[in-house]
Amino acid sequence: MTVAGAALCLALAAAVASAQGLPVPSEQEFTGNPTEGKPAIRYERVAGEIVGGTYAGVLGYFAGRGLGTAATSMMNAEQDRLREQIVNGVGIVGASFAIGSAVYAIGNIGAETGSFPQTMGGVSIGVAASLLMSKVVFQGRMPSHAGTSKRRWWMATLDASLPAIAGTIAFNKSRRWQR
Image 1: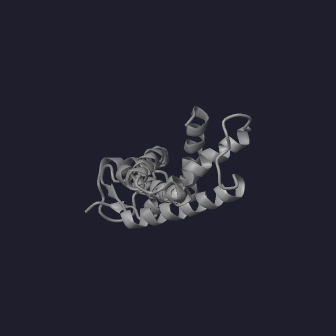
Image 2 (image 1 turned 90 degrees about the vertical axis):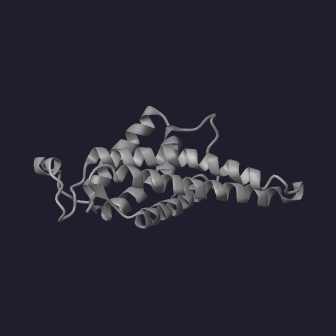
Image 3 (image 1 turned 30 degrees about the horizontal axis):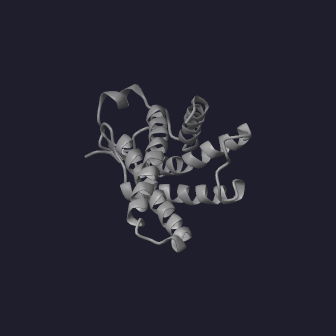
């Protein structure tokens, strides 16, 4: 991801946090660990969840593809299309779990916690939106390196970040103080 892509992720994180309409954390919330109510949104944590989730998703995708490639290595040449679908599917599943785990781990730092199943539900919605956007914008394939416009690369960055954004929103909806 480029510096511009990271900047887009940070801007999206700020938009996600402000869209949730929660108050900015007060000084008192940083000094104590209340057991009642919902913790305030911390924008640096939301940005960390989105950026960390996006990068973890990229790593998880390639790890999943490697696992899928190893699992389908015995398939014959006539089944190349099926093999590629399996490899890609395992890559997407690997990316999804990597994103959900990263968002959940970053969100659970300190005295706050959230729901892993709800986080994974958000990631699933983000994956579905990302796949739909890929079909509509990229006609099912990423643009080639040569001759692409900035708009396509911004869309590719958003495409890669959607699952982390949706997972972050879902996690932050379930946040509470650890007891």
